[in-house]
Image (cartoon, rainbow, N blue to C red; front, side, top):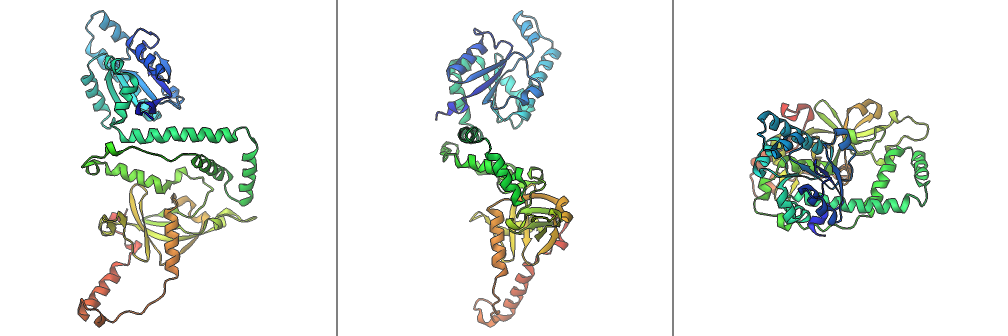
Length: 422
């Protein structure tokens, strides 16, 4: 697929001259349609509510000068007052802000004026404006819209990857809908009754089933990212953004969970202490006649790693967190935190007593790994200690002291968490 074709689909163009085929923006619109896309032309800026309805848009084109009065004055050669210019800029920046807040799509600002001046004003309002491209209208006409988009996407790895994924997701979604939208209109009811008979939240399970069906129709990806890989890229990356991506892979916040859904991996927080549910999924369902509030969860205690504890656990050579035999570290969760869950004790608590403290859920395979490690911990054999004299690298007294120090270090007591653990 040509990089410019990544944005094929629907383009929303906001320009007061969009209906004039002979104008510069009219020529740009012709270039878009000739490339196989469709144009929704708006002569006035859409409201916030209107923007929210513009789903499925591939990209937006916005004229920098949205104030028609200033354009008319410029044509007549009349000097535009500074207050009027400032009002026009404010109007455009507000539209760009509304688009960014309500629609996830690239925004291309085309202007007949000074490109560098426009870039400076946009940079001041959007320091992280990687989703914005500023070009002169004449340059876009000369190069062609698809070529301009193709060059721009080569500068944004995020736009390149996410747009590739989005197009494949749309294709898979259409394939699923085509298969099951009309074949048997009652299949959701049949599955709903099955989930309901199982005692699980039927809405939650049906939604997950649909997502798995769409995923099963997606074809393998072949991202060509070598051109983006340059020396020093990692050092320049935003660590916070990387942590947010990793957290999204393994952790769902409570606001995205069905309130009646209970599963292994559910995390609760009481003060500074974390708890994670490790009870098997099939046992996290209230049986017939039982109240879900009486359901007992098997919880492991955990505490946020201090900076020192996390530094000791980080193994940069292998890209992992080194864990002791009696703990599992989940990182990052709950706004980038690393939490150590201890295996030595299980807390049994009823759902009714703890449901208000749930903050999220750890996803497979991360919760699965924790459950497997805990299972191995429960079955660990007890072996006798080696006598100190059996070791060749330390004297008896040194070895004894080392064993005591190691034993002390391996104990993480959540009740003694420092202020750094909050």
